[in-house]
Image (cartoon, rainbow, N blue to C red; front, side, top):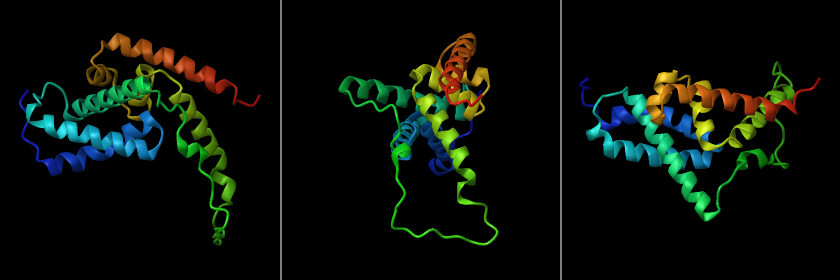
Amino acid sequence: MVSKPVSESEFLEKHAPLVYNLALRLVGNAHDAEDLAQDALLRALKALPNFRGESALSTWVYRITVNTWKNRVRSEKRRGLWKMVPLSLFKGDDEDEEPNFKDGEPPLDTGLEKDEKGAMVQKALLELDEESRAVVVLREIEGQSYQEIASALGIPEGTVKSRLSRARDTLKEKLQKFVVP
């Protein structure tokens, strides 16, 4: 499969948002996601002339992003800097700021429950081991097929399915304590 050459600007325009979203789901906070996305995109751009077209370009970029993240996790674990909970969960509101109410807007707490659920899911996701987290993020959040995930992670499709099943069970167990009977 021969692919047509892609300019750097076309590449970045198409893939930068995808890489950032994947990075955000993998690391759990915007600051680290920006750093990871930038690193992954630079690696991809340097390697772009060597892209052989054996898979979709997006799958290749996902693989570079996941591998960049895994390398970073291993490096940070060795140095003892690995963070399991994103700082965004601890952000406080500016107490001096006046609320801005407008007619016809829903109450301020309307999205609170949704935000709390999202934070719980993100926290549980960040507690998964890196292989499980990568599979869940690529399948459930990025919508990748089993075949695309297998290609992106360099593992057999059956391994993708079994990791995904175990990761879903683990997430269900972790989130069970938050379910109100």
